[in-house]
Length: 550
Image (cartoon, rainbow, N blue to C red; front, side):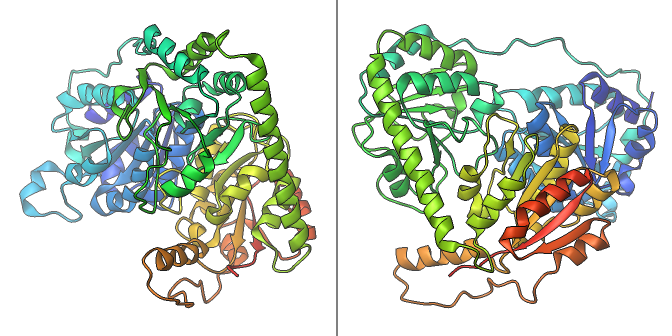
């Protein structure tokens, strides 16, 4: 059999159901083989970065290993920003690229370059298949490596002549691997003793809890401790219902503000890792001096990387959190947890009151505030709809305006590179065909991947693309204000190169790619527009005019 058949068989035996790709000439062997494998769906995109970002959220939504297929050196270069996001989100992604015929290697062929070296810094393993006899073993190792903790992307270069070579070596996949580590019970007991003695414990978590299916266990633990649960700002999943009193919200991006969010805590329980993501340097640590730090992690590589732990335990997060919850039983007076939960409920109500006051202050002003826009979008949502969020400066408002109950109600972006949101919505829609998707994006972010609309139209995916158009890179204006203050550059009021003029017309862009679009300027009309768009059951775009930075 030919190498390309071994490649496709390897995808089949490893349970791959989707390839997101932007094809080119060196991908001809793969494209030619797809006709014989109708169970493997190929989703065509118009840019390699879109293919990778869509694949990332597909994998996050399904828990499956996914394939992103890109084209030779320039195509791989186009995809590297999105590949960084895959790395930061620990996505089990197999990225492949067709490579030129290896017999042309010394002739400097068109589009030729060292693909393995290009991808290597952003993946767990980067390799090229040098002969069809290697294909089965390379594919098995690639799938294994992508799924070893911590999960992450791998890259395989596929020369066109190797794909057409003959081999007698068949594709294979190993049987079930039982790799979930049970936590050390002595460590769990030590952690329980430390947390039971705390007066003001807090919990910090990344996306690992959601990916492990441990969110229900986390909720029980938070209630037993009476502790607030904070998430990294750049989150991809919901780990706690955002209307629950224990939901502490998203952490800021500097140590001083993180420390303020924690208050006078005396114990911090970190779940997963690593922590924390910071944008600005502060000399003081995020966790107050003297606070005990306990960390439960699913693999040793993220344990105790940046913090002096009082106790650190490696183990699968679901069993580890459950074991810690059981170990705390009887050690912590129920009245203490109840009193702390009551205080958290008061703070949650104060937060809601503050949001209502801010809404009342903005009223029906035109252009509307981003808070009003997000509130109206939430009001127009159907209960089964999923939010994909890349609203950037409105992300904190999204975290509170919607009613996110479980993992799968929300998907965000990791890594910080923009343009992943509306592209990722494609992957969510393919992964969750029974649920409409509402993708919220800033206008600057949307332009990085606006070609996503074409794929949505091609597949008639039920995605409502909501573009918050403030005609500026608002986040950069906020950040340059912070920069000027931190580095004492002097009082400057101008924001160079941060306005999106001439103004972008997203309804016209949508129409050009086969998607019906409308513009909403009156906040009183937005919720109804969202309802209509969801009811259409086909891709729709709503451009919402929102106020810029004041």
